[in-house]
Amino acid sequence: MENIVIRQLEQMDKEAFLRYAADWKKETSPFKIEATERYPNFKAEDFEAYQTDLRRQETTPKQTDYSTATHYFAFVEGEIAGEVSCRWQIEKGILLEWGGHIGYGVAPSFRGHGLAQEMVKFVLPEYRKQGISRVMISADEGNWASRKTIEAVGGLLENTVLVEDERVCRYWVELP
Image (cartoon, rainbow, N blue to C red; front, side, top):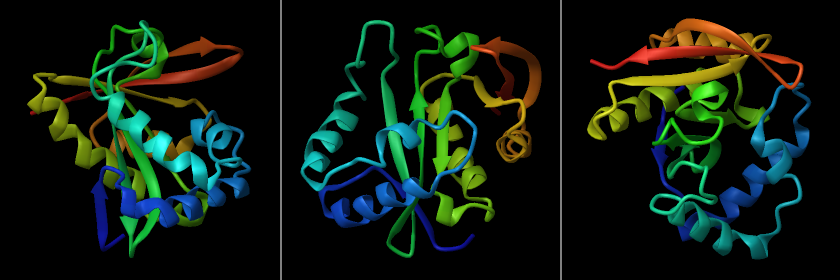
């Protein structure tokens, strides 16, 4: 996919974000995707608070057992096509067990073009800058598209764990 810009959300992105949130209403995937819960009922008046919360998470976790996080959004021709979250403290909460350092999602209208891989490639150097040399990324066992994405960026399967009756594959990416 060409003409991808990956960056943090800005105030000027409000209308594009509302279209992105609406796109998630089309979601039919059986996999755990946080956006399917958060975005379908998103309202325009929630945008500023949401943007503020994303920035706050960079220095202050939502809860004591959460990691700080940096959130990036992928833009294709001015439209938000996906997002990727960098979680910096893997030892927090469920991250080491099955959540991982990186979480990502691609809006239904933009799938099948390698966008997830581009987003993950974009954030991997950010971990190196933070002094992190191994990054854990997970995917539901049956989510072959996500697993292919992780393997394409160098992810090696360590094991599969059972989480709430679902099997989750844990991959590690060694950073140069």
